[in-house]
View 1: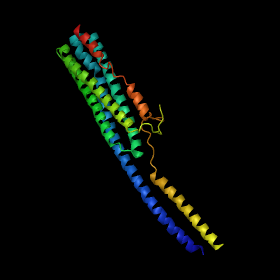
View 2: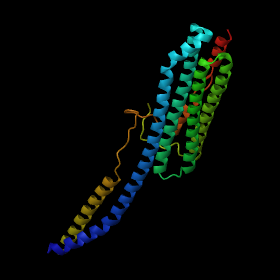
View 3: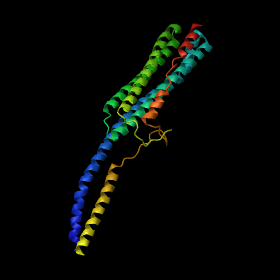
View 4: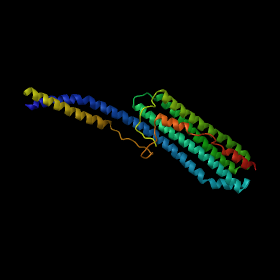
Length: 205
Length: 75
């Protein structure tokens, strides 16, 4: 007696489940695709950061060589002080670049959540990419300045060579400020879309 | 009496279908949450907190040591 009813229930059930199953699968596919794109971008950035870190470490390790080269022209004490001043300045630049990179990551996380909530953030993503390019340009310019400083320590006329270092360093400062302005622009765009007041699942540190 | 039994089968069947559907939607949509490299508490990504940290970023005097080096070289 119960068999025909069971058959009806099973058929109805299958009809109800089928579209839900398709919808859930599509959702999962989109999610996986987004996750893959995000992971690819993260891997690329991690590689860049690793390269930058290696360059920074190499520069630190070569300090002794630079001092030995420069002391022939300006004496040991002054060579040490010059190296110390330059390293102090480089550290400030590196900290600023790291901070901007961190802020860019947080903005990206914000955008990701807004996108998942159904907002169109493609233009803001382009803006963020441009800001990230500016940060990379600052990192590259800093590497160039460090290379020129190394050249200066071997130069016959360090005072003259330092002018080129100074120009490059001022360029780095300029590029960092441009990157900062670009990030401010991205945040203003997010605020313009009224995406900023949404609650997030992340906690403040 | 017979009609009540029919109705009971339908209700039980629909409840079972909904439970299975809910399970499927949850299971197929589930994606593990990444914690990244920040440890237990990642930095906040609210627009307000990002903006506050951007405003607090001091980029003045980054190259202040240039004049110190120039002085050393001028001696």
